[in-house]
Image (cartoon, rainbow, N blue to C red):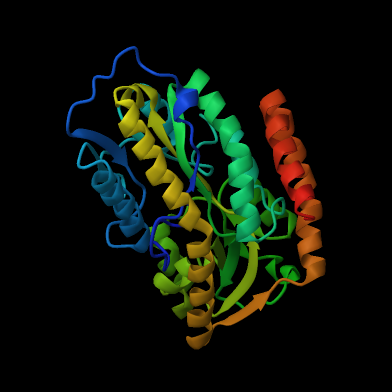
Amino acid sequence: MKSTLGRQGTLAIGVVFSAVACGPGAGSAAQSTEQAPVVWQMQSNFTTGTAYAAMWQSFADELSAKTGGRVKLQIHFNNSLNFPVTQITSLTAKGSLDVGEVDASGATGEFPLMKAPSIPGLIPDDNTLRAKISTAVDPLLNSVLSSTRNQIVLTSCLFDGRSIISSRPLTELNGLAGLKVRSSSGYEASLTASLGATPVTNVGASEYYTALQTGAINALWGIDGQFQQAKLYEVGKYVLDARTGGNYVVLTLNKDSYNRLTDATKKTVMAVAAHAGRHCYKVLSQVSASAVTGLKAAGTVVTPLSSSERDKIKELSKAYVADYASKNGAEGQKLLDLISATLKANNS
């Protein structure tokens, strides 16, 4: 699985996660076995040299600094441990990884419950609201992971809503009819088909530029920062700024690794995550604004969706919400209720 972000980075600077203080809910070992330093292992889809890789490394550096070197996070970028990204939840559960990078686009088989925030059209493109959604749903995700998969939620973030860059003129949803559009599998592919386009799910991030250039695809879903940093604007001069859905990424921590820490170190680890969470959506907003400015400066035609087009996607999302609910039982409905209550409380 390739990240819906392409893991080719955006212009993000800093750590962008929503923290969940799950430590107490994870249980505690009878006696801590922490030794200094504790070195946690993590595999990342992010590509070395990109802003997202730098973001992860900033998190690791802060973790080491705040714990006085007692906890170190060794990140293996570019999937260099060769662990299947579709199995990160189970690999973290059994301790092959201490920290798991679990995202909605890759967790379909192992942890589909987490996919709800990523459903296109469900959550508006409002980072303040999205941060509240993370806060609302992560305790439930943590409870399920802790009780069934030997891990806790450390941090999470619903990344930028996704837009479409096209090599052909595209200024409205109707213009997608007949196009071959690179889409993530699942609900994004379903949305693409509903809009009259042909979803293509087997083109990897490293192939995006060439695929657009050669016509193997006519357009692709992604985020504004990705379009700019990967220079996709050179082969796609039109961006339909749909900003819908988004990849929900959850950073999980093996419970045994957590329980080996002293109580003081546990508190510090969660405090670092909380600090990162407060910075999350502010950074995303800054990154998006900068990217759109850069795309326009490069001569890209950037067109926001009209209100009627957003309503159309919202209407289509009802089928995806119903499908999600039917496949995820009581816990899925509970999570949807948490999202609905948060949206209602914020008049969305």
